[in-house]
Image: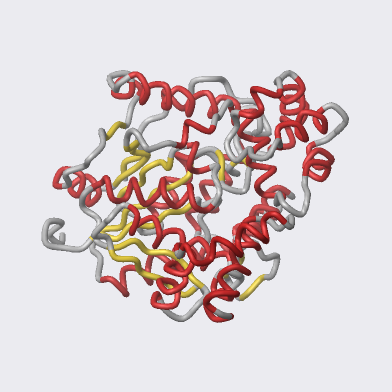
Length: 402
């Protein structure tokens, strides 16, 4: 085996919901581009950034990642996994930096070079755009749209157009987060191939995770098989046979509405991403809406995107509060192979590394509370699977070792 100490390590922040051919290609391209001998993945757990549940559990997805070329899989904590791009990126890069052995952060991009992303990241961080940003926000634009147009007004179309593509926009946040952390990690962009993010378009043997999920929810595993590696298909098939996949948030629709109707305005005001009295709008809409889609549509305005509303509603159900996303408190292992084990033994992490309930209970109180929050969310995820799952899986599931 290559020397871990003398080799390079690249990290990828991902959801793998589920792991598909495009993800495997990204890992391969990352190794080619960086020469990395070890791949670390920071992966979302049972819930994901679009304000939804993951289609199958995090340990199954960690196994897919390892079989697809990763060596070490860590869990991105819930408060960051279910956050907007800036906080999602800050949590993931913070973990990557805290591991203490990563040389590169690899991400997908639609543009041609990291230089374009770096220039746009500088533009986004420039105080010169703030007056125009504030003016556009006051006019009712969403933050993402207002920021893009503010960048356009100061830096021109080239910088602003970078922000119009989803992978680019997240890549810009990764670069900004690395700078904010004063990290030595080098950002590396891998041009996305095949179907674009969140697209229903099918391109050769690469489809977006969105398209694959819809096939799985419709029971079309055979059709999805063209766009996922054989090991993903096997794992998903086993999970579906056992009634553990595909998970669907709609199975908890009444429970989510019940939770919202039982919350006070003051409790709603403590949720992540709440501002400008949005809690009052949610409070009122929750009392008239009779479905989740009706609730999302009733709350949504030009100012608040559908994705942001979904994340806020999910946060309410899971018990997340704004203060939970202040910082990452530990590094939780989900899976590793021999190369990953050797990397971990050589690394000098800046945060505690845990892989079991016993280790979690040995952490300081605030970190223990975050672990228990994650476990509680896992119990609620178990209500979203075809067959209801018992509580406690998050505490009793074993580390995946290949």
